[in-house]
Image (cartoon, rainbow, N blue to C red; front, side):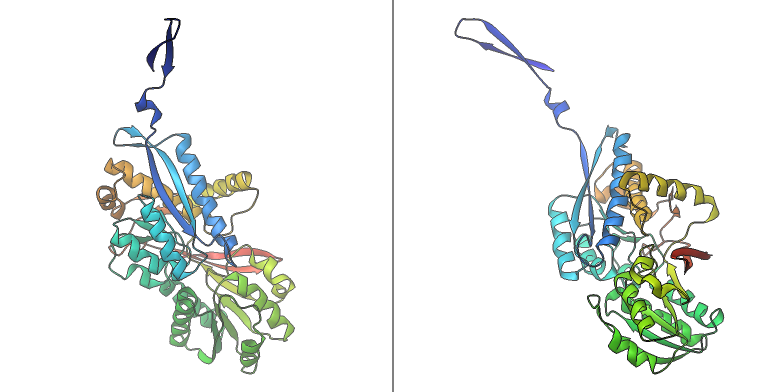
Length: 381
C-alpha cells in the first residue's frame, strides 16, 4: 500500500491509502477455445468447452508458477458454429485478443482452415477431437491433436465389419464434411481390403434431417452394413428412418456418432439393431480410476454427464500450461519446443507427440449400444 496526502481547505491533512500498482495488476495468461457452441453440434461443443473451463478453474485454484511468477489463466471462448468460414474469423479474433495457445477446434472442417492462421501467428493449437489426417500433414509445427486420426479409426472399423460382423457387402453414406468424408473413405478402403464389396455410396449434408431418399437407394442393395460418416445429430434420425423403412442392416460410424447422446437421438431405433462405433481415444486400465473421478467431478460441477471429449479438452489446457511452466514463459516461441517434446500424464492417459503433432501410441475404443447405454468393446492401439 502507499499513501497520498491532500491539504483540505481547513489546512487539515487528509491521508488516503491506495493499493500499490504492482499488486493491482495481476499477471494473466490467455488461452483460446473455439468450438461449435451453437448449431446441431452444440451439445458436443459445449461438452468440450466445459472440459476446458474445468481445467482453468482447477489451475486457478492453485495458480501456476511460470518463470517465477504466479499466473491466472483466462479462457477466451469463441463459437465457430462448426463452420469453416466462421472458424477462420474466430481464429483471427483469438489471435487479435493475444491468446498464447488454443484448445480446439472441434471438427476437422473448422480446425484445418483455422490452423493456418494460428501457424502464421506462431500460436500453438491442440485439437481435442479433430481426426482428419490432413490437419497434421500441412507442415505446421503449431498443430497438435490428442486423438487417433481417421486413418486409424477407419482401418479398425473396416476390419471389424468384415472379421467380426461377417459383412460381405457394405454401403457408405457421408455428410460431405472434412470429417465425415474422411472417415468414410478410410472405412471403405479398409473394408474392401478385408474382402467386403461396396454396393452403394451416398451423400447427405451435416444440416440434413430427411435421409429417406439415400436410405431407399441403399435399401435396394440390402447391404450387411451401412456406415455413416458424420455426427450423432444426423446419425440418430438416420437410424429412426432406417427403422421406418424396415431396413435390417447393421449400422457403423466413427466417433461423431459414438456419443452418450445417440440413444436419445435414435430412440427405439437402437433396439434390436447392432450398432458399432469407435471413439478416437481410449483409457487404459492404469487411468480408469482417474477418468471416473473426472466424470464425477464434471457431473457435480455442471449437472450433466460427459458427452465424449470433455476430458481431452481438459488435458489440452493442462498440457499447454505444463509446457509454459517447463519453459518458464508463456510466450509461444519459448514454450513451443517444450510442447513438442511433452510427456504429460493426465486424465486421458500419457501424452507424447510425434514429429507431426500426432499422438504417439494413439488408442481408440470400440463401442456398441445396449438398453439405451453405450458399452465398451475394448481399447485398441
